[in-house]
Length: 438
Image (cartoon, rainbow, N blue to C red; front, side):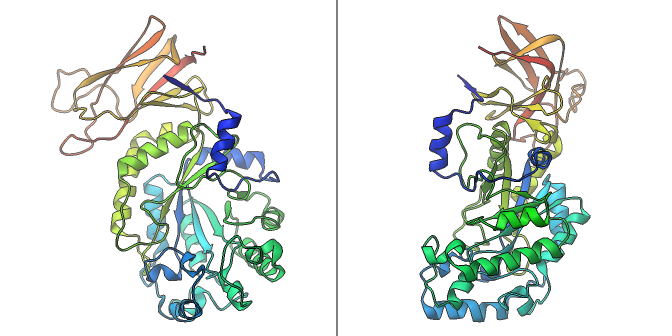
């Protein structure tokens, strides 16, 4: 059954109630920057802080914690934080190779630990054995690779609450900046440091009450795009339908945002690819998280998954970047996007095609796409002329418009793995087609 790309008010409201975060009616994001953002498709989220040394949830272990726990966290952990293998140039090379277009770095998470050189507190990376500004190093390295730079900033600050001798909590009135003038002043000073001392910041992610903070971002850098705090940013789940306006889905690679050395279960590369396809078909961006080790290296298991995603994007990126949703999200296991600048160019993602052998043809039927006398077909990444080691084979993709349906005949021809068992979706490109609307 066709699932139409309709924004159904009640469904969207129901989903928001179930977990979409960050939208606000006050929005000064510039329209041209919103369109720029919608073209990017894939961002790298980086959760990394002083408690990565413990392998615990980032910051949240402080909520409701005892005074002795807080003492060890605030006073002892910084003494041993020394990411001597942190090389953001390597991170940027990996991100660029694997198809990421922007990255969002945790300048300060809820604990209040600052990963940059701040004058507001000694609870920062500058008071560790590392004693260098990790945020500046990140920004410089990613800009050098023409990757857009984003800052994550938490308005919640457990260090400030501790200084005020308040219980460490979230959502309680005294923990909210709008009810805590000292915390609000602290946040505004820190955000001003970040927005005036690190060059152009393309994206700002405000993980908490955005009041006064997003306005400061737009005042200091009008071209900065505020994501959480000004648009929908569903976390660890996806809407059933496209959301109004731009949106960004935030996902972990495993079960935790920060480095988790044990008891972890990672998503497969194939699952990441399927998620990205669904998100783009629904008009969103994927902000995919990594959690570096305390020494600054990206864990082996995370790199492997990212590289599989990167290989698939190396082949099929045309269908993911600078696209917009087709008038239909999907037909069964066939998902759609269309070219941003040419609505008559449609991309069809052939998902869930198990045991599709190289050299084998499969047939697909589309009800939402109508061919014209100018329609052409291709499989992304392959010229449709040669099947390796089989000179008599004809891998040409074919189509036929018949009985009100568009019939595709596609061969899996490109050799990606030695064992010929590349399991991930092929993408068919159709040009000069028309939508079929009931």
